[in-house]
Length: 247
Ligand code: 4GY
Image 1 (cartoon, rainbow, N blue to C red):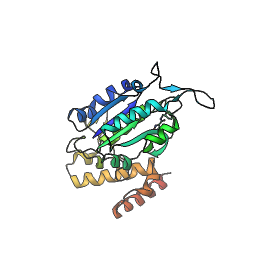
Image 2: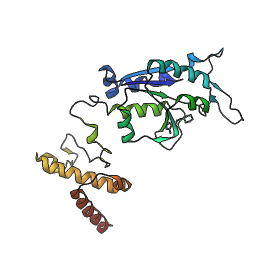
Image 3: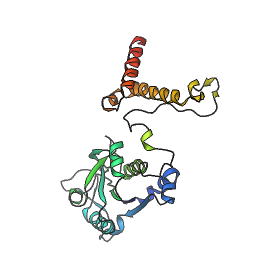
Image 4: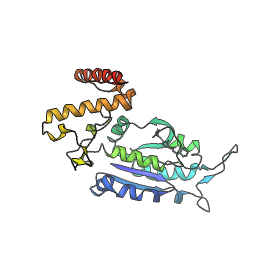
C-alpha cells in the first residue's frame, strides 16, 4: 500500500516510520510511505503556507494554494487514492475503519496545522475527514501517524504470518486477556497455573473468560456490540453475579 502524507513538517515522521513493525513493513515493500512537503508548492515569495484569518481572531490559517497544488501533484501519481484530512470533525477512527482503509491501494493524508486549513481547499481536494479522538492536537501529523500505524496492522504480512490482527482487542469487540512471559515467579507473583498446563482448550477458555471479565470491568459499553456466543453469555452472567455479590 502507498500512503502519501502532505505536511509542512515532514521531519516529524522519521523515527516512527523507520522503527519496529512499520520500519520492517517499509523495508519489505509491504508499505510505501511517501512524505510530501507542502512548502515548496507555495507560490509566495517567502514560501509561506499560512496567512491571517479573514474575520479576525487568533492564530493562522493554512492557505489553499500550496495545498491544492501539492494535492494535484500527488494525485496525478495516485489518481485512485482516497484523500483523507485528519481533523476532529471527522468520522472516528475505529478497528472497522482501519480494516476498511487497509483494502485501498493508496491513501493520501493531509495534515493541517495552526487554526486549520482554508475550507475551500478541504472542499475541493479531500474525500473525507477522519478523527482519531475528541481532542485537539497542534497538528494533524500525529493523527496521520496513528492512522498509518493502525491501518498497517491489517495489511497481510505486516504483523508476521503467525500473528493475526483479528486475534487482538476489539476485532470481536472485546478487550484483550492478560499476557505473561518469563520468569514464572516474579518476586512471589506467579503466572496463572492454567497457562503452564499445556492444555490448549483450557487455556483458550481461560483467555476468553478473562477477555469478558476485563471488558465487563473496564469497558462495559463495548458488550452491547460485541460478538458473543451462548457460552460467552453464560460466562458473563456468572461474572456479573460474582461481581455484584462481592460489592
Ligand atoms: N483529533 N483527529 C485531529 C486533530 C489537528 C484542526 C488544525 C484529531 O485527527 N486529527 O486534532 N488535528 C488539527 C485540528 C486544526 C490542527
